[in-house]
Amino acid sequence: MRSRASSRTAFRMTMVGLLVILTGVAAGGCYGMRELEDLSLITLLGVDKGKTDPILVTAVVAIPRRIRPSAAGGGGGEGKPVVVVSREGKSIVHALQRIDESLARNVTTIETTYVILGEELAREDASCILDVFTRNLEFRHTTLIAVCQGTAQDFLMRLSPAVEADPATYLVGLTTVAYNDLGTSPLVTVHEFVVASTTLESEPFSPYLVTTRKTQERVPPGQGGEKKQGGESEAGQGGSRQESQEGEEVVAVQGAALFRVSGGKIRMVGTLDPKETMAALLMRGELQRGNIEIALPGAPDRQSIIRFHHVSAHPKVKRSGRDIQVTYNVRVTASLDEAQGQFQEVSPQFASAVAKTSTEELRALLERTIEKLKSLRSDSVNLGMSVHTKFATWKEWEEFDWPSQFPETRVSFDIKLFVFTTGFTSRPPVPR
Image (cartoon, rainbow, N blue to C red; front, side):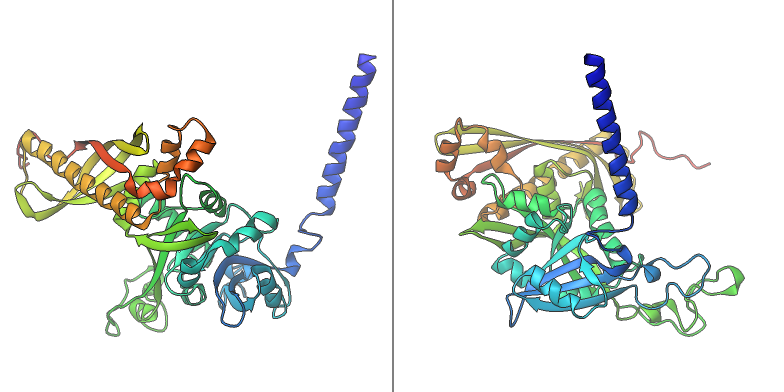
């Protein structure tokens, strides 16, 4: 009996597997019963406050044949790689339906990598994006979210990638480098934004993007650009490289946008500059790399760069009734990457002084950042998650009302910073 039941189970599993394979083959190249060639893929989505309708949606639609030129070199890559379309609507989906009316293909957000919120909308209420991203299957939870200075429509219209042909790839790469290598920007998905906005332990935050106009001096004819193989200058045909880039908009990550959830609305309440963002990431336990600038001990006119290589921060919470005291145990290993001037110090005492100065600079940065967060009542460093562990029941935690108690929390920092590579030697260099 057992062998017969096992054979039946194996047969059923085989048939199910074949059915799945045949379904995949039949639906290959389709999404929602539509061919991919019949869809307009939105790679970037901007959301603003509308003038006549509540929502203004700006969609950056990719043109694949222009983003990736053909290897044969014929036809591909000519013209703009994307089309930017804006429409107002009563909701995001309604505005996208109106965009459908102006394009020859149905728009879809299955390839959307970034959603950009205009600052005016973010400061009024950013909750308009939550429902569609948690309900509609075409809106992915892994989509990144950011706030831009001004309107998202202007930001996306002026977005001019410096390296990548695809604006979405460029924007993702820009914020990823700022998060992983520089520590000057968060990297937040819609899912993380939704979770932070629906819990009592934290508040959401996101990258804060701005655009600035590039200004470069014109190079006289015949003097611009280095020579490449074949005698062609780096500037290319039609003028110098500097002239061709004059007036372009450059995107910069200017730290983080802070939010606070109150009265059922998610409002942007302020920003952190890049250094304060690095401090916030450190307190969140997410900082991978970063750096600070210090004045060398005994030489205030000489600036140096201290680069962090390994960073950890663990909050230790003490509770006495409604009084909360938090001490962050911060451990950093760093190196001195650059020091201005020709003077070279060789004493071990000087290396110790560099570590002490770096510790004081980092402590001042952390204290300034946490005080700013407390003044804005935005716990974007997830401190509430650590404080929550000191409460026995959920009812007790709710009655404590962490959002109102966060500004009253006393926070201190126990920092141990080790500068292992200072570039200083135990003896002066000997000429060869």
